[in-house]
Length: 339
Ligand code: UD1
Image 1 (tube, protein in one colour):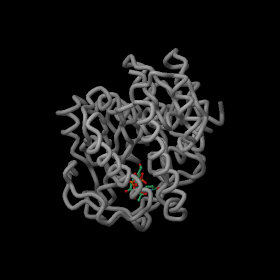
Image 2 (image 1 turned 90 degrees about the horizontal axis):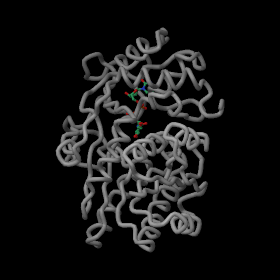
Image 3 (image 1 turned 120 degrees about the vertical axis):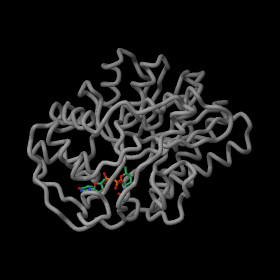
């Protein structure tokens, strides 16, 4: 298949591009580079030995998107990863989050319809489950009752738009992938996460402490009702996540469906820090701190539906993720900016 990746130069996008190319698909990328660098695409090309057509544009730029698709026709499918993703920022700038995340998805669906592209895989998030009532989370778990932030709401609304669009169009194949916590990096050390400024998420923060650019990691909450008192999450290696996109694309059938992409294994904050210390061979200074507002004690997913219906399963562990993240971080201490 020839596949358009929106946000294809980002952390998950670049890994997905590699997975698609290695599975024999063709890839083209549209990305506005607001959260990443064209260097990521250059490195995808280096790893795969393939030239990847790249449009640097906002997905809301209907004309640019249409021209790009026509220049590269026929395009068979879209994997839609472009969007803003910082929870705190979404609370400070809700209108911008609705504008960018919803606007890009709506423009994309309209352009796909006009160009006859009838398959879309969407980058959703386990954040749509809000505070879990029961663990592990399955695709039937309730969503959205208490979503605390506009970022999560945009994911839920886009899921609903896709579901409605598929109900109205018997030819549309639409899949939402609900990611748990993506971590790790490409084993080559050439591609990885490159957050700008101080990272919000745990593994990038821990990695910056290990490399010495941040002094210590704050452990947000030590009195949760979990085995060691710290928060538990379902950390999925980004190359396993990327493989999930290829499986979803290849197995997509008419209609709408959703799949959890996670490991099903809860890992605590202290366990992740210990795994990163083993992988890096460095001690990671930590400070026990109060809970972060909005955090839940534990969340992890049941990935068995993706196993049954997509033939997909995770292969890598938290230790693999720490090793690969550290390999990327230590080879690229300044991320793509150091290239
Ligand atoms: C966060 C977002 C979620 C988003 C996901 C993307 C919030 C409330 N949720 O999830 O919507 O989909 O990232 O990966 O921001 N922690 C520390 N110290 C730190 C950073 C984190 O102890 O410096 C802890 C947190 O309390 C949590 C765990 O590490 O228990 C994971 O945190 P994080 O990586 O931010 O992910 P989530 O909160 O699960």
